[in-house]
Amino acid sequence: MSRPARTATPPPDAVAPSPTPADGPILGPHLPNFAHCHGCGPSMHGGLRMRVVRDVRRGIEAEVAIAPAHQGAPGLTHGGVLATAMDEAMAFAIWRILNRPYVTARLETSYLAPVPLGATLRITATCTGLHGRKAYTEAHARTDGPVLVHATGLWVAPAVSEGGKR
Image (cartoon, rainbow, N blue to C red; front, top):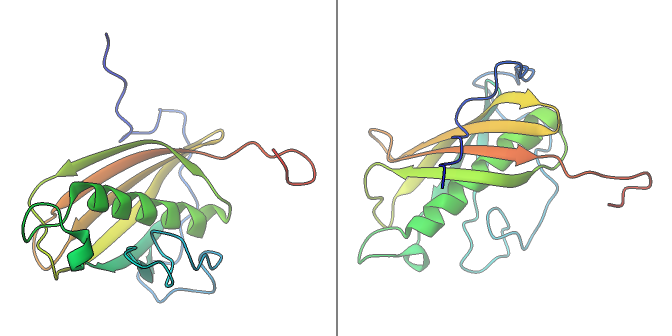
């Protein structure tokens, strides 16, 4: 069985996405308000309640407060929670640039060091390339020091027929 290609690098004929304003406050709405979204919804008990805090070149910077409900091993954040946070941040980055939904086709997450409970995780996510209906993303998460989690993603724009239905 051959190993699938990694998602970190867009193909050579991919185009660079248009940049968003760099290092500034968020300009206008960044996503529709999904109150019960597990990643960003303010009403989702036990969810991440991620909030985007600024635009960066071709993406966003977001914050997640790691709560006791996010525990895996004692005192540490569950890896699935961290993967979800990376996925959500990369989705925000795509939305900020392309202003339309994309769905995760592939997510690769590298855990470089444990993330303690009670930490505020800061995630920088960017869109690195576009190729047809595909978008490529990358994200880095840290608390106050080095990168703790790195992720790459491949995203696909859902096919929508006339009238907005699949």
